[in-house]
Image 1 (spheres, rainbow, N blue to C red):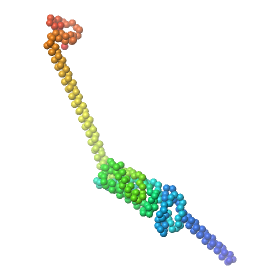
Image 2 (cartoon, helix red, strand yellow; image 1 turned 60 degrees about the horizontal axis):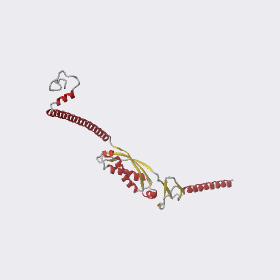
Image 3 (cartoon, one colour; image 1 turned 30 degrees about the horizontal axis):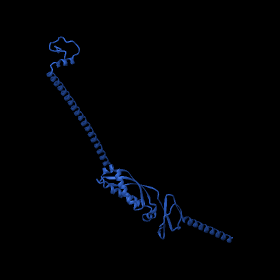
Image 4 (tube, one colour; image 1 turned 30 degrees about the vertical axis):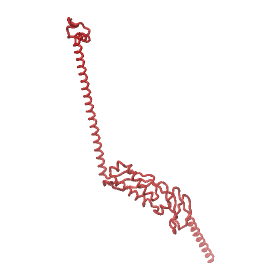
Length: 281
């Protein structure tokens, strides 16, 4: 009986040992591979030599179990949003909302990981955005930040791109969705805009009044010129009649005939066609 019990215990031990060995082998086998998914590239840290100078592409790769650890870095376009804080040239607090589209340079994934690590957003991108926004914003007053947003965005984009490229980060696009100011400044801007609009309206009204006055002056000049020309015409007509009378006294008969309405006169004179001139006006 005792021998049978010892045999059973021995078999159980062998089974447990075999199971442990099998589990260990499975763990070793599983630890010998790692997979890099689509849109990522991998690097491996070796406990003896540090970061291996190799970049691993998509797919399955071998590694040394327990002594090597893989890291996967996304090389597709990433979006990073940040609320920056700065002060304008005229000391107005500004809080722009910055959106950055970027990707890691595929040819320098190893360099980025070795020099910065996988937390490059908090160590590189965030400080770069904050410092660049502060630097550019300090060169402009608050009103320029509102009116020249595109120009200022290009300045920030150019300087930020230089900073990121030195760390093998490639900028694709930059957006500044808003420049938020203090409530007091927003009210002051609104009041200024309203005042400028009212002033522009008054200037437009003044231009209308000036134009109408000019029209009246031109109309008066035209009427005066017409009256002058009419008077000049009447004077010329009188002068011509007087010249004709001085040359020929019978001209008056011709003139009266031109004015005759076809009615017979009441009396005839001996020296002219008509002796009564009441019919002639």
